[in-house]
Length: 369
Image (cartoon, rainbow, N blue to C red; front, top):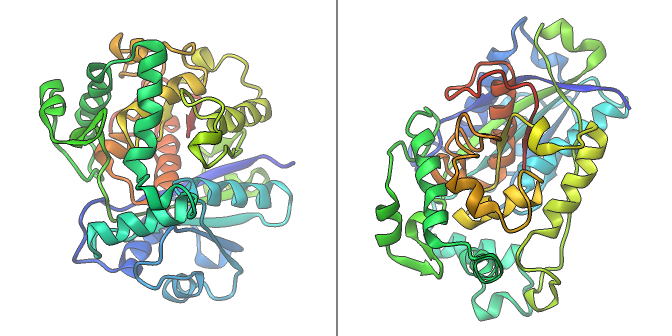
């Protein structure tokens, strides 16, 4: 396999973008991505495109995106893999370049979530991501799904709502400094605990918002990367994982086996043996506060059951053992599903080039999950 680098990244401000259509968001992220390439790049240099997109709220297809961006001469592939759609689009593009099939490719992730009623998007999204026969009819929404994992983690390890609230407080603190974030305001533990209950143990401020947004990255083979930039950021490993959908069949509700499996494979590719010591910065999928706590453990930043202690001790803060979600994470930056993984990749790209808005000092190795 060839080494593959990220050579450019672009992102638009996430939020309730009623003044922008899907094509507008994609075009803005794409143009910002082109402009970010240090030595310049032309659309004709791009050999293939991938689109991370979860739900067709605006009739979007790869054909529509290719047409609007003027990239009709290259093949396009849409990747839909629930909340992993953007990250999996990057993984597929990475493998295509690593294999030698392409030298330079574009990955765009975008989602328009606020132009339809919340109940319509929420239930349709749940229908697509759960077992339609068993889970969906009994009301297992995203919040209910992750709440069951959170309650089990609380039961087994004594994790508290206060520790979960600390995740929200931390991510809003960094989101307030992040120009692309949906929510740019700080909150307190008391704010989280007093917010309306959604699905125990999650209150409203434990939950990420529904958000519009788009992001884009360009990947290039090592052989050509330095034609475009003197500071490429190489992707050392990438993987994805699966677990059983139906909760009654899950063997362990206090972790995410899919994350563990994906991390194990990606770490092996990258030669990472001690993630807590070797990874300098991370962007994690904090769709709900407990998810970030469990992911600390699944990625090996701390031992099983110590995720609550990890946040409580400030180990995921700037200056801690592994600073996490210095972009504000999904909690403050927002979660436009197809764009999320691409935006995470963009933030790690900026972190490792020393260009982030909230910079982890001396970061050389990063990950997103």
